[in-house]
Length: 67
Picture 1 (cartoon, rainbow, N blue to C red):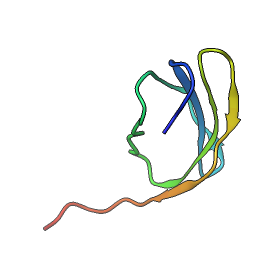
Picture 2 (picture 1 turned 120 degrees about the vertical axis):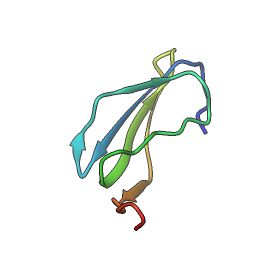
Picture 3 (picture 1 turned 60 degrees about the horizontal axis):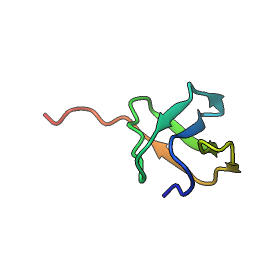
């Protein structure tokens, strides 16, 4: 959950590759994962310019449609 002054800017990577920044105003925020890989939050910045390092990662895998 983000605290601080909205809007927030999130930087993240997939498999270590930087992704386009994501901006959001409501917390909590859910990032839709459409590409398989290791998603890692690197930084989050609020509207006042306060920045904190991200922590944690998620392994997103692709699962085929049921048959």
